Image 1 (cartoon, rainbow, N blue to C red):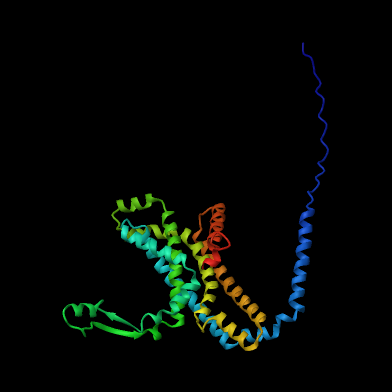
Image 2 (cartoon, rainbow, N blue to C red):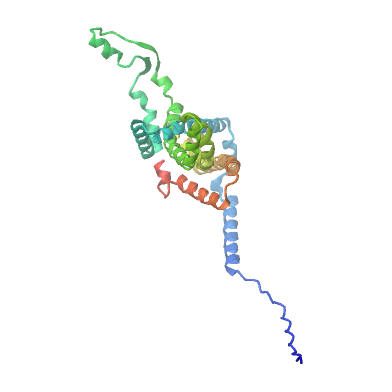
Length: 326
């Protein structure tokens, strides 16, 4: 005998009344930012201290454009020296030879410790040490004196130090040699980021140390090396303004200061310098973005974000004194 049990039907739930979360703080922040932007635009338009007509007229004159080309040349040559020598110093730091490792450590210690402005002034006055730069047998006069020949000279050719150690060369050497110390640490970190198993496998295949570094390690290390190198390039662009005190006449900031000395309009020319450096930095940022995207293929987004944070911290020196160090 079966007993039918009636099951009550479930009541249909009422539609959910979704109430959007309100963010009054966001709207307040937008309002504050809008007011600040309006105040800034009003300042740019109404304040006569900017002297926009005079600024635009001066910042595109031939001496300023020549100084702009000089700044770009300083950037290119300094980074070429810094990257090339930095790779050599990094390989020396990783060498099992204690002498090479020690020399590389002393180099990075010295050029990271001395500010770039001081280096520029030192290199700008190297002509006080030598009147001529000559190439030949080292200690030729001393060797000749040992054998009783007091006028012995074994020098092939030479140059006047004043002709060679110009302001531009001094600026390039100061910036390039200093940059090599920073690039050496960047390259060393990139090489150490590659798994040692890659090197062991290449050695098992019979590749030499140079082939392993050139064909196995460095291509994989580029993912770590490229982002901070882009940041170092941007920092180098800003540091080229330091050579105006060497002095290097064919440089952007020096030419803008010359306009200040001629017109006594300091603030408009400093704003012009700001605009020029913003323009050049923007171009470098675009190039850095595409390089990072190319070498970061197959690299996780979260890890890229952490890497970018580390690069920004490294660019600023980790604290507010990072800029002063350079």
